[in-house]
Amino acid sequence: MSKETGEVETAGSEEETPGNKEEAEKPAKLMVPMNFGRQHLGLLVHDNLTFQLEDGLELKANSLILSFNSPVIATMTAEFLQTSIQVEEFTESAVSCFIDACYSGELAKLTKDNFREVNKMARVFDVTWMINRCRRYYLQMVGEMTGEDLAQVHYIVDEAEYLLRARKDPEFIKCAVAGIATFTLEQRLKYVESVYESAAVAEEELKQEKVEMLLKIARSDHVIQKSIIKRHVTSEKLSLQMTDTVRFILKNIDLASDDEDHNRFIEEMFDVLNKAPSTTVDDMRMIFDLYKQRCSAALSPWQSLKTSDLKEGSIRRQSENEERKKTHGKFIWTQTLDQVLSFTEELRSHPLLIGDIPWSLRLRELLTLHDSLGCFLSCDLKDQKSAWSYPVRYSITLIRSGCNKSKSPDQFFTFDSKHRITGEWGFVSREELMNKDCSFVKNNKIRIKLEIEIEAVSVLE
Image: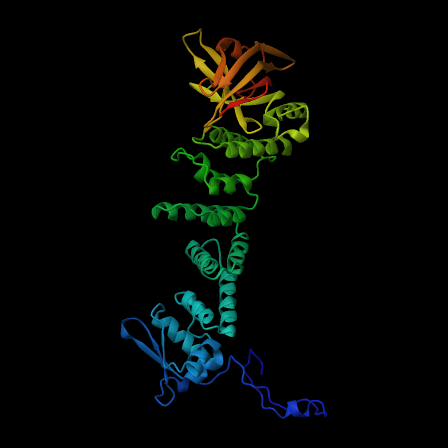
């Protein structure tokens, strides 16, 4: 029998031979979907199986017809002799559609409103052909989906997410994402923003799986990526916490491109990350690694850095293959600081990780000292239960075009659990910083080089 037409395949259609004569004499096995005739629905002589719904509502059907479609119902009725099935979790519309389909071989009563429950019933009772028809119905909806009808898009995605959660079936969400990815940039952006607006109304945080889907929809479009980043990382309304979702976003966005605005925005994002509260050593390591990836990926003209600067800007060590392991030795690090003409109170660099120890440079404003800026070296080690000390020799150099101007001679300082920061208050005056002849500032940025030599670490239990 053809699965699509429901025609019964008869025996003896092939030429009989001694080898297949016995097999040919066997009658054909009934296959579904089959049109048993809707006219038999509701006949008392056939209705020996009761579906019990909520509020005492009952729908009756023939157990044999349903058993042909469902091996589960066949087992319940033939082996366990059940005459009723509890289906309180399903609506009357869904159960009626399910029974009608088993009788007719068609999903004539399937609608958007009962799709989820009919699809679920087909899976619960293992009606293979009905599962495939539901999948076809869903794919048809995806094919007809447009970016102009956001309600329809949300419906399609919701159904796909339900199947992913309830049935561990990723096929539907892949189809939905592929369909949305064909929308225009404006339509995709509108959908992404509507997802966040709906979550805000419901006072819910988007789960990582949802954010992953949005990033797939964004593809490499920086406008949508920026919208997602703003919602999770750089929003002024949020007190940034390094959640798994934020970590996932950081690892799955474009850190560098030919788009000047996008590069500037990513720099601002790193500034926000650098000031995030309660950042663990592992998170600081991740942020620093991502920043190095950004620097090594591609530079846009607005950064005004040379390739040689990048090599110097990375953690340059005597032994590159021991980069993760070394906690002492000589290191040279160049950092670009943004917004130097407009910041107030303090401006911090991105973290420098040496082993598991995070270090940073800080600029601080001191109005009482001839409008000067102080520059400080900070050991940002947190959550260290043991007593520790780091003897350090360092110098800080303010870099300008054509030459370097050292503002701090070699200094020696021992960092410990009680003394985590050292530096010079009168590092540079605002007047000197703004002097065009000095060429320190370019595009509201300055570059500072740190040469640091750390002696063997001492840890006291």
